[in-house]
Amino acid sequence: GMAEAVTNSLSKLRDEDISAIVTYLRTVPAVADKDATRAAFAWGDAATAPGEPAIRGTDAPIASGAVLYSGLCASCHGSRGEGSNDGYYPSLVHNSTVGMVRPQNLVATIIGGIDREVDGEHVLMPHFSEGSYVQALSDADIAAVATYVRTTFGPGDQVTEAQVALIRDGGEKPLLAKIARLWLPLLILGLAAFVVVILLVRRAWTRRKQRRASA
Image (cartoon, rainbow, N blue to C red; front, side, top):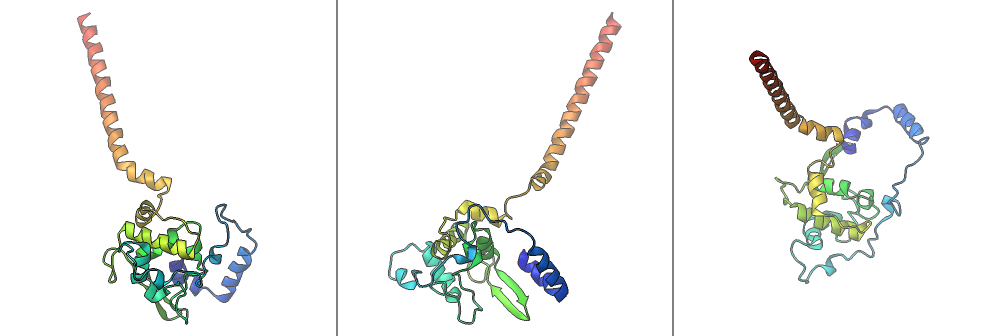
């Protein structure tokens, strides 16, 4: 992803190269997502977030997004999404990952976590996939907590279990990738069809030869 590109490549560029890239990017017209109603970083308000009081003491199901957020996310990001005072744990308010039109980045972050070095500091967010040292979450669990986060701090849309499953599988595959996965079955079918055609031609040729001999 972009984080890896920054860590392993862009962060090692010379200042003049970075300046050249910035100069070029400023000449490229911005492309707005037609479904966006506001900037991705403009969503959320910690003052109006429900926080812990709205969760504790209720009979909310254990797999609800609010309960999962309270148990797995609030200790770092805050019960109202405010993050830590020093910014080490990011706020979910005015967070572009949370506020994007589509939930792919948020869901991918929950699935894969973050583990990298930035300016000599270790930045870590545990993943919640199989093998997590915190808790492995199912597609339904991740959909629930992502929906809670986006409803509370973002555009407010529903994240589905099917979306999570697709993102966990690497996202929508491009046409060439889909074709590549089918090449072996197609090759087998092609060879089988070729053999059938050869047999039919041979059979027709044999019959024709027999008719000529009998004539």
